[in-house]
Length: 292
Image (cartoon, rainbow, N blue to C red):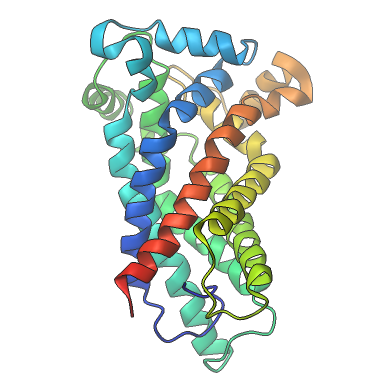
């Protein structure tokens, strides 16, 4: 198993981590997309219960666009996004931490890798946000919250025609902050847990179940911390929304006080925790499979 990125294993290759991330992102989306579908719907309708939200989603459309199939609405573009997003994320993190150690630690592993993993997570979150996440998240929200069942291509065309390229970055500040805080938490937490399980021996291989558990805990921690940012982002990207970020924050508070900022937190944890468990376990497995 690959050691934490804060170490100085010369076999650690950013490109190898990119391939592993792309495979892991695909596995994550196909396993957990229905939970993401419900989470997004719930954040735009915070007064509804999880069951009511499930009913709202499955009642849309007919045939292959309705019923339980509606839970997989937008899964193909989400898969394409995940391939690039997660691949870029692990490449950026691995590249940053490797460069940092070579430039500032003399090529040696830092005694306390927490800061390096924290900074690497922030860098990875920034890079993936601008290159992939911000425009893809806006299109996902528009596609999932539309009144009618239109193709993803039609949603993209409407945004481009009516709002231009800047429309693809609407709500981008909230998305950027969410991704940065996500990975500033997930990378240090995951590596702190797995390093503890290894007893400090980075060459030790952990069972898949332990990587799954560490990934789930890292995902849960990040979700509890930054759910308000995710709620603000979702509201700002909703079709027809022309309010400023301050107005959106006020409207969320008016909907249900402080607790409204954690709307969809439970389904988001139910989505993120298993998703991160799968992502981290697959990344480590594929990295080992690819070899030096």
